[in-house]
Length: 484
Image (cartoon, rainbow, N blue to C red):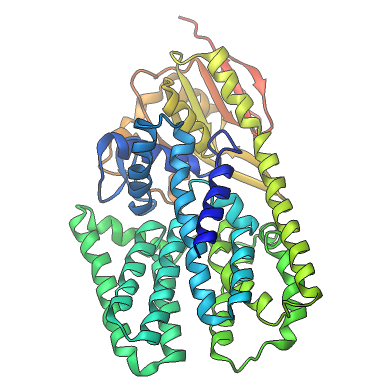
């Protein structure tokens, strides 16, 4: 166990330095972590200094506490200091996987389940970035381990991990993941010791009670209720994302040959196998109905278990495992290489060198959170108007805005005409689908008439008294002048 801890910690620590800039949703989280460091721990997420309710706050608060000494004592760069929390929790997850696998399998197979989990592309790619799944998975695994150990040892101390799991999963990532923890722990009790279900129910009530009390005393209980409704009856599973099925599947596909080979030796009457099979079933609709690869986080352990369970570790199977692990690592490597050459770095460098921090810059259209983060942390004079989305062609994503030419020109010439709609005048921020239709925007008064406009690439549009100075794949940069 100690070897797994130290080796995985070292590996993940090295990987956080492989991409030297914020990527994807790290943009949102990095702004919130910075605000938490500046404003102190709050019972809600902060975004640009305001209470924001698109995600619960626990991960942001914990990552901020981890980052503070790294920045103040060791002078670590913000990007890597913020990612260091993921190093810690990814390492803890490896240890938890080993402990759970050790309760289900012999030590040799438990070791290989742990190795495959630790080197899975999803873990290597997203488990070393500022993503909530890393920490929320920790709480899910803690609940399962608590259930296992309680039934094995009948010690109430282990039972205490279940309410911690429920609260931690719910307030790290989402209430849906809190419910997932409840269901997995409940499934374990139903399969292995139904006689103790009363203690499980009590622990669940405590966990749910903690969630309710936290929301009530946060100062915004009605907003947490809305967040629960939106999250549980999720808006993220309304369309078919066939492209994502193959994208996500590619991070797991190297396990499939092992699964096919070993499946014939899996006893479908074994309760441990039944537990893992039921656990993995939701992965299929998630693969098809969401565009988010990182949801695979929660299913790597059962898939790995089922792939290894029926194999013989003293045969050619072991050679195949090693070969397939290398394929998985190569998939991760390709992702790191792709991000390292991301066009967004060129955009940011151009903004710093040619636009400057004093000029007024509007960022308009699809939510360019990586750019928001860069501009925010570098001290640019900017406002953003979020009114757009993304078009997907296979694995390629193009930014799109929802503005007409007239709307752009009205916005440029009279930006504060609807100041009531600016985030600075709101009590709190609540991000939902309707945001894209309502010009969710900041209205910094030092940036009213834009000198530059960075807008999503499609549809093409003309802006009065402005000229294109840079045309990127996803964004177009305009320079504006005004006739007095």
